[in-house]
Image 1 (tube, rainbow, N blue to C red):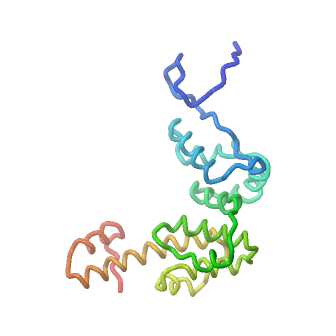
Image 2: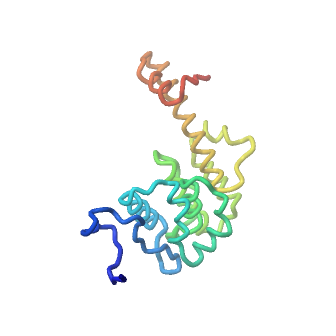
Image 3: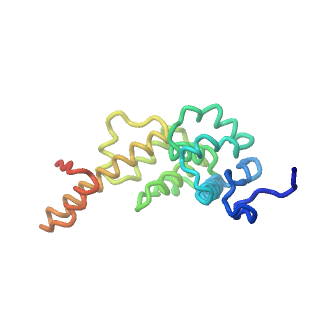
Length: 203
């Protein structure tokens, strides 16, 4: 028997169970939606409905509309990692803010690599910079030791840049902890590096 009841994220009063699929408003960039806010909304709904990243990868296309769905079909079908997919969607649909060249050139990495990447990428795109200049600007804002790790075989796209910089940044933090430990003569930092990075000490 059909009913007019709309599914929602609340517990169903008849079954006391979470609906098998979350009820979600689809992401439509043409309606002024912000991709970062929508992905947070999507992830929260999936968490309430106990949906893991595999489910998200298989079903996210149901919740994309307009140019977002077109981009997904054209560019994202071979992606197998949900975090990589989110980065590509953000890279392509991040809404610009008013910026100038100094916002781009002077923005340096502080603590959050993802925040730094998306903000600087957004600045570069709004300024109309070429992909190569954006990649160079992203690297220029990193600590010197990390820049040196990227001089050989530099990345060719922002997504590749983020993946490689995440790895390089982790290695840099590990070496920083080792250096601090050796200077201070303590044990805690070195133990922490061993725990996180698997006894892979190098100089």
